[in-house]
Structure formats: C-alpha cells, structure tokens
Image (cartoon, rainbow, N blue to C red; front, side, top):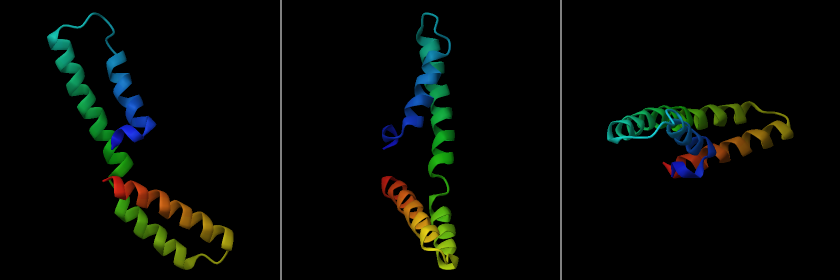
Length: 87
C-alpha cells in the first residue's frame, strides 16, 4: 500500500543512501531499524488523521456557498477517501 506514494519510496531510499560505506550485517540491521522509524513517522503523517480530516471537510462542505469552493472540497474529500480505502 505504501509503495503507491512517492514520499514513502523517497523516505526508504534516503535511509539506504545514508552511510554509503560498505555495509556489514550490523549496518544493514541499523538501516532497517532507521527505515522502520522513518516509515512509521511518514505513515502517521500521511494516514494518521484520515477520518478526522474527512469529517472536517464534510463540515466545511456544509458551510460552502460557492460552487467552486464546494467542488474543491468534494475533490479533497475524494482524495482522503482513497487514502482511507488503502488502509
């Protein structure tokens, strides 16, 4: 699921680019741990508040008067719902 997002891929690649010296087993283990931490942080930022964001946007939609504003909110709700489906 995460691999669909560029920033996820970027986070993992950045960890492996750090410490580019020849790797031994300890360094590989450390990179895996670092990657786990970075991906967990990324996931919390990217997906951690999906449901609350959808509720917030739905409330905004109720108060929107302008058609253009409504369309933008509906589009954003759709994007957040796609993230919700991935979870």
